[in-house]
Image: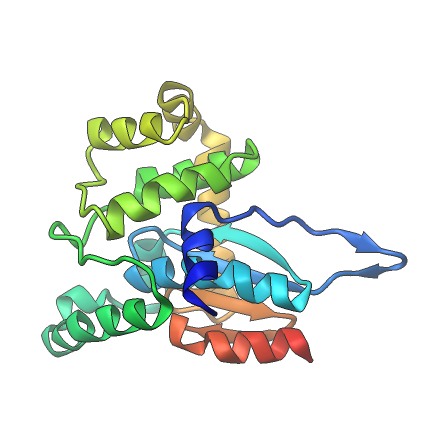
Length: 219
């Protein structure tokens, strides 16, 4: 994906919904993500272009990465010193390849429970594109402390989102239940981290597997 398309993807990722063409459903890629994952951020900048090239839809699936880790016995690389040190050089390497801005968040790891409930609510309300365009760069470009409500509120307002309404939605039981259900479903399907992608029954893990996602969509 060239740098121009990467920038366009970062500035506004389209919320691509499932469509029907004749009697056939268009191709889909399911994107399981948590805003607290830097590799999910990198995938977010690239996946829309890959899907568009393949004529495919993206099914956005917000999950709680901490909950998934707990369910399957995994843990954040932040708690594995050798992997954390390796990622400190690998992530900028991929950001440079993609032509997108990236800065390791100085507050990482961050509790993303409220952010991911917000993603569920934004998706239901049809504003996920605007939501992710605000919160992903705030986390992984501007290095904001995105587990503080005042910081999140300012970020959302700057992105043209009614933060007060969204905060109310975050507290709704249906939103909490949907995030739990998404995370439980991810674990039951074999996911163990984020980003995870499904094309049909095939699962791909990591933003460095996007070439395989592209091949699966082209098949």
